[in-house]
Length: 302
Image (cartoon, rainbow, N blue to C red; front, side, top):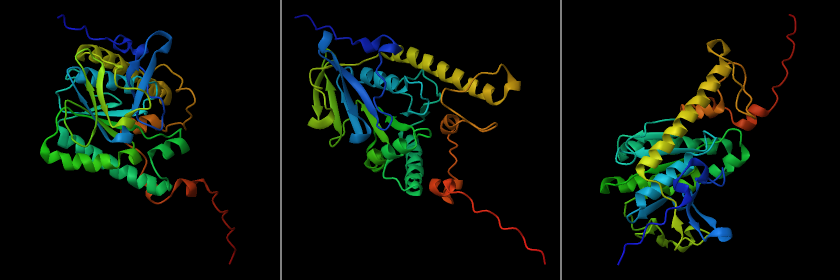
């Protein structure tokens, strides 16, 4: 009996066909296409809403590759930050704005723990409930969603990972774990043809996951597309630098809809370089900063 040919999805061919996240306030990822022709539709899951999602089956890594590209295939440089743990997955992809590679999972967890602490303090200072509320209230100054991608987890790291992801929905942090088995985690399993065979829990997606064709990219396809994204983002940052310092080269306009004071780095650049202006937030909340300053009384002569 002939082996069925894997059902390749259109999302494996170009950036244009890779669906982008649906909502800036959620870590939503299209993982499959269901139906055909006019009935064809995208099936998405909320990564942060379920903490960790494990991927199983012979095409698990290809689904992870497509997921990474989909999350980064957006013009908003601050929408998502991918943290790759180790060099096992996509070793040919260097760091670029929006994608950071940690040497190993413990190092990646160090970074996520620091980001979790900062976000917790930021939400407390702004008197907001969660990441989604922050992005809704301040769309011009968003926090990027953070997605950890790891292909193995040592028993010694499971407790730290569970602690970080326990606050995932509130802080906008999720994990995609191809080839990892976690008993209590959400799970998507692919069959030999690249279709989703099982998915748990039942509420993992509002759409019908089981039987849908998973979006997949080979390692080389994903590397090529991520290289294109990296170059595009590098060019955009160069444009920002030239806009701030015209003497350094040809003057280029800022990103549409972004206003900044002369000499002040853009909000996107502060996010990408990890230099959020949170030091002065510890003494003044946004609401306090927006209140008018009291007028200074004239000094009386002696």
